[in-house]
Length: 397
Image (cartoon, rainbow, N blue to C red; front, side, top):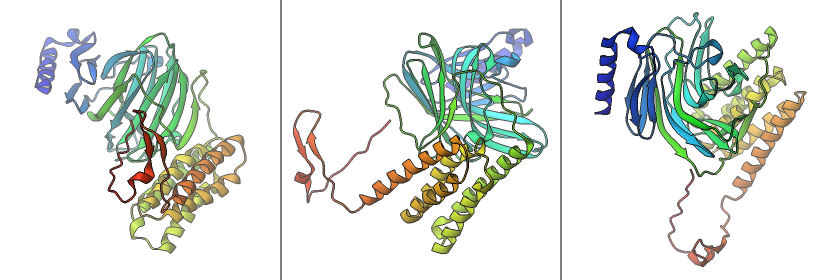
């Protein structure tokens, strides 16, 4: 019924002509997504409680205050104080068949104070000159100026898999996280906002492809009471101060592209890990480690921790815990050879995760020792359950 109502409104607006589309078109509020807004009146929404699809027209739609283009369709609800919001964005964002043209398509979370001050955390697909990139983009605008441009190497994504995004807002500090489907959280970085302001938060996207595009979002969750989630790796992006976008030397950009292409190739080969023998798995690990032999410490090294976290878990799906640890050991040794403070921080991230995995695997087969008080104040001792069938419910948000 809601989808029918939206389509009816769209037809009515089209009949009214261009003059009636000068102001934002508002299609009402739909729980839990919020108010649907289409500034140019040329897009549509398909809505259910679990999912929303924004159907972009072929015209350009953006969220770029610095270029006075804020016409992207969006679904927003008002929130203030401390809160967290999470959403899943489907993969396979449509790009033009001609990859030689420049095009950007995205969908994700947006946190708006107003049209000059906002944060975007989104999955992005970009093509230019025959090259195609899929990555997580974390950007902020302050007084209509971009604080930092998102980079391909910040957090590469699989083209077709869903990706989760999460924003945690506490006392004016914003923490941005992303994770490929089924993987641990990766912290993109942090930003600062006015803690006293009221914000509009929800989903939106960008389309400069010149063709219609549909972006689907699922399972949005808003929380005023939340616990910060743990992350396995970080891009260490700090959006506190505006800064000019750095221009990397051409040779460094070429190395970045080569590294990303190599990582994508390893991901594809990893799909057959369960079918591989021991020698083939060792060769796969060696090939992955060899990718970082020419990494620049100030650029591509940031791509390593999230890739290692994903790569090691691929072996976990095959119950190959020895290889999972070996991935970390070999990458730690490789990163150690890269000079620079960033490589030192990345190596510390890898070492912390490796040590946590070693501890987890050391507990396999050992009896669980747990005693204390329940929430009701009663004494609890796990030993009293010995010999009984027990259902353990692991719960998290």
